[in-house]
Length: 184
Image (cartoon, rainbow, N blue to C red):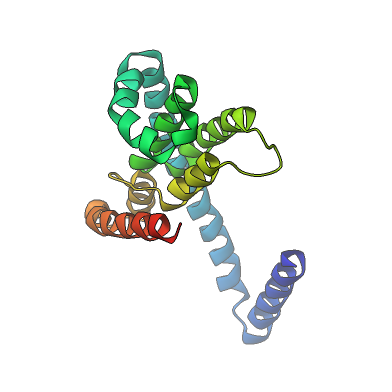
C-alpha cells in the first residue's frame, strides 16, 4: 500500500511545485531534508554505539550479574515460568536495563535473544508462553529512567533543553506499564 501512496505524494508535490513556481524551493528542501536525515542518523548512531559499548563492557564485568541479582525478585515475580534459568534471567535483565536507559533500538537485539532463549524452553512452540507474553508487555511499556534516544533526537534538532523530556517520559512510561500490567 505504501508503495502506491508515497509515489502519489511525490508526484503531487512535484506537480504542485511546478505549477506554483516553487520548484527551486522544492529542490532546496529536498537537499536540506537529506542533510538533516544524515545528521540525525549519525547522531543516533553515535549514541547507540556508545550505549551498546557500555552494555558490552557491563556484560563482560560483574556489573550485569549484580544488576541481575538486583532485578531477580522482580524477574521471578513477573516470570515465574523461568524458575532458576540464570541465562534467561540475565538476558531479560540486560534488556530491561537497556530499556530503562532509553535505548529502544539497542534493547531490541537483547530482547530478541531473550525471546529466542524463552522459546527454547517453551513446551508448546506454536503458542507464546506466559513469560514471553509478559516480556512483550514489558518491552512495549518500556519504563525509562533516561530516554537517551529522545534526548539525542532533541539535541540533534538543536533543542534549547533536550533533557526537559525526562520527567514527562517517566510519567508516561509508568502509566503505560501500569495500564499494560492491569489489562492482563
